[in-house]
Length: 144
Image (cartoon, one colour):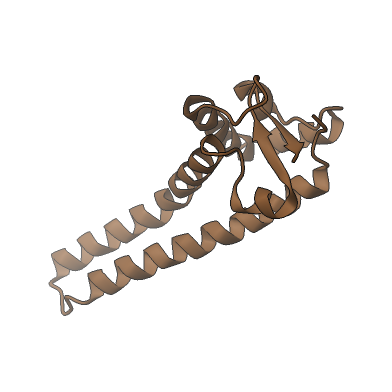
């Protein structure tokens, strides 16, 4: 199988980020509409609402991304962005990764962001264009 070029991986990632932002925005709008439909609130209810919104804003993006990538990768090897760019994630047996490997890959993707996105930079030097989270989860991104 032919490794996916970096530019396709990046373009697919940006499309997936767009999808994730749209999903996150829809979820946040639904939560806000529900929360603020009960106005006026007392001071304690307002503090509880603000604490809940802060919690949602901090935890929803990484959890939504983890769920999105894990489900799409384990159910066919392709996210919306990867489908559009003609690439897919495969496991060691050249089929879509198992749910466990897809989850491990997703966690690795989130962790790859922490050290100034260094986990993504491996793809630029690796001949197979694999990132360190691809190595971690025994996956690779290939052309379809």
